[in-house]
Image (cartoon, rainbow, N blue to C red):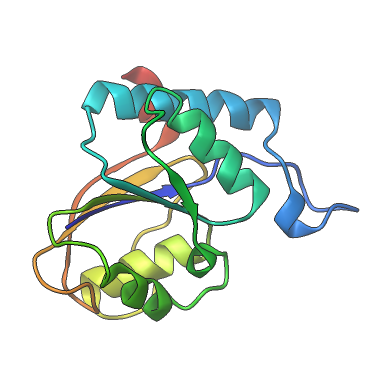
Length: 161
């Protein structure tokens, strides 16, 4: 199974708007366009898309996948900022081993989840900046210490693709 962790693009700062309702900024929209270009250029063989229900994550996913209208974006509550990675691991058990899943999520969840998959520890060894994407492979069931980091791209790198 390949897991593509995508942190949402830049969003408006918290203020009077609830965290779940924060929208992408103009910079965030541009970052999401870079993600779309990277996904297209890399020809990522996505089979599923799971997305946090937060507005900024959904907006990032819609822009990033605009060239792939057949891919359905499914809301997944286990991808919110403070979710327990074990909930995602449990969710992923329902997918075939050959799945290629884009996970559109947040910090600190993304870094903690990646760290747990790579090392078995939830101490972040990887920091996911906004609008960055990492690809991990698992050869067995998705659980602590079973992941292999194949690559990580910052948005600046995706912009160059």
